[in-house]
Length: 491
Image: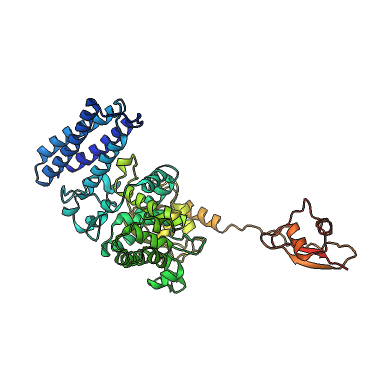
C-alpha cells in the first residue's frame, strides 16, 4: 500500500522535531488559555493520526495520506510551541509519541507494511500492520498473539536502558546488529517456529553476547545466547563429537525459544519475569513471584530482591528489542546488510584466519570478515588449516570474492606465510636460588590471593615483617601470588 512508507517516515521526522521542541520544561504554572489551546492541538493531531490509520486500513490511500499530513503538521507545530508556552509539560508530548509508536505496531495498514530485517535497514521502515501481516512478519511484533509494544512498559528503567544503547552501548548495538544479520537465517526460524518475536531474540543476543558466537562469560555461560552448562543440557545442548553445541547459533536459538516458552507458561506470559528467570534463574523467580500470576517485575517484593545484574538485564533486553522495532524514531540507522547465506568448497587448504586476510575488505567491510567467518563456522578452530574439499560457510556475496582472491594469486600466499610465521620462545630461565635466611631455621610459605606481608607474619607468628623482608630480599614489602617465601621460625 503506497501510504506505508510516508506514514512512518513522517512520524519519525515529527518525533525529532517534537523532542527538539520540548528540550526544556519551565516551572509548572496554572493552565492558561494558550496552554489549553496547545494541548488541544496535540489531542487533535493524535486523533488525526488515528484517522489516517483507519483510512489506510479501509484502503483509502489518498484520504489517509491527506489526513496524515495534516495531523503531522499539527503535531510538529504544537511541539515547537511547547518550549515557549508557560506551563507546557514535555512529558505530555513524549506520552503521545510513545502512544503513536504503539499504534504503529498494532494497526493493520497493509499486508506488506512491515519490512523484514533481512531485506531492509530495519523493521521500522514501514507500517507495522500486525493483524494483516504474513506470519513471518507478524512474529516480529507479536508474542503468542500479544502486541510486543504493549508488553514493554516505557518506564524509567527502560528509558535509561534506551539512553545507554544510544550512547555508551551504541557500538555494541551496531556490532550486534551486523553479527545478527549474518546469523539470522540460522536463528530466526527457531523463534518463528516457537511463535516468539524476533525483536526479543535480537534484544537477548545484543545484551548477552553482541552476536559473538564463541562468547564465554566468567561464570561459564557460553554461546551467542549464553547458556550455562546445566541449563543447556536440559534443553538439548550438549557435546557433539567434542563440539559444545551451546556455540551452535541455530541450536542455541532453538533451546532459548524452548526455555522462554516454558517460563512464559509458568509466569502467565509475563515477558519481564521470563527474562529475569533467564538471567537470574527460574527457581529464584518462582520463589519471588510465587503464586501471584499478575505480579509485576517492578513490584518491590520481586524487584528489590533481585541482583543488580538482573534488575539491569531485563530493561536492557526490552530496550534493545524496542530499538529493533523503532530505530528511526530514535535517530538510529542500522546499516543495510545482505545476510544471504552462501558457501564455498576450499580449492586450497586454508584456515579461517587465512581466509580473513585474503578476503580483506571485500564487500566494503572495513573491519574484515574474521568475526563473521567464525560465527558461521563455529566448529572450526580459526587457526587450524582446513583441507582441500572442506565446505566453508560465508555470506553469499563473498563467494565470488573467494574465487578471485583466495584461490590463486598473491593474497593466499601472503596469508599462508603470515599464518606459518614462527614466534621464538624465550630461553628457559633457571629457577632463582632460594633466598638466604638468617641463622634461624626457616619454613616455606606460598603466597595466596589476599595475602600481605603483615598478614603472613601474623599468621605464622614469631618472625617480624622486617626479618621476612630481609630474608627474601623484598623491595617495599611487595609480594605476588604464588611466590614462595622463606619465613624464619622461632628457635
